[in-house]
Image (cartoon, rainbow over all chains, first blue to last red; front, side):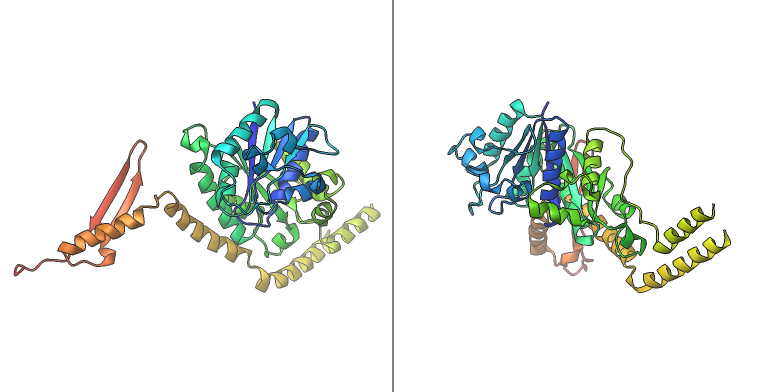
Length: 274
Length: 97
């Protein structure tokens, strides 16, 4: 049974594409045949984050308009077996995405893929609505910041009303919270909303916390999803989140502040004394 | 360990000093809780409710002089039905009318 996952947030710049790329890579590395689709028509970027921007020939809209078939448009990932990318079109035609067109493509992918990851654009326009419409599961990417939390709550409202599952009265979409750009140090100082603050307000199950990390920019600079930077905190946090998504029990990491340098020094001294 | 306790206290003291003016997370949480609670009550209302309220007001105003605030339209969702409730507060009509 194919599972369709939407990566959504409402607000822009919180890490949807970073998350989509890492999730798709993570699922494929676990042996699942995975497709990741960029729904941001006109502002294609998933290709850059996945490092396949120079291999784009046909795109999502070409397939909808039957100018190419799906197999021609799907880009096979260079490194990971069983991972395919469907890039967005750079057209400025807002009407290019249609619900029937998206439905047909997903139905075709359903035949051979285990997971389909839909990278939603920011906002609540057509691209965002269609990215979530067919989903079975939603990952709501949120920064510990007021505008992001508010927009996430708005998206949760749309997920429970404006999707195929809601319209057909089937089981609701599974909702997961992914808190990104988290800085335990600033939380301890009382400068940033804490994990428990965001959890309390949004009240959906927590999938993971991705710490603010220089590895994320390095990853996008080089076009290799951050999950492949296995030694980095953010990469490990994504790997943990995927494990949890697949039902593994993994304790949360990167949510506590590292000890203050004075305390660390002291602990070192204590050890020496023993 | 007495020395360790003392240093922990000192560390906390400095953290407290830093916290006093920059600790805005609590404010953020309070503001969010209020606005989100408000938006959630609005969320389930259909888009036509505001227009419906306006038109109902116009009809009632043709016959009785009323204020904008005196008409209230509420939609309440029950398990298998919705109740549209219209509340109009009419001004006391003097017997000479």
